[in-house]
Image (cartoon, rainbow, N blue to C red; front, side):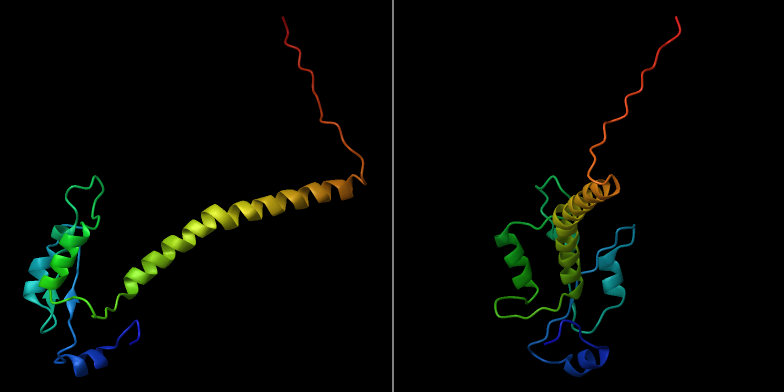
Length: 143
């Protein structure tokens, strides 16, 4: 199964016994995701309340709960072992986190190190091998 599905595919497969549509909407403003789900949703879809799923004991917001609680909530939604999920947004977020970490910790420092080597080599080339002394300026204050 592809990571993304089309509306045509969903309309054709909507009654299938092995398909479970989950609405995991979470608004960062004052809108109520559960109320919007109740007002309008894909037929047969279930609502996953992410705000209530989050670990209330964590000092950080919206952290996943312990594995037992998470598994219990997923089973209550009809999701369990052997199921297949379509989560392109989650993959994009994880990919972005990994990419930004690699850039920050590996690529950028390596690039700066290479540039420093080029600058040093260019300085030798322009100075024709002469070592230059740092300029020292004497400043006298009027008394």
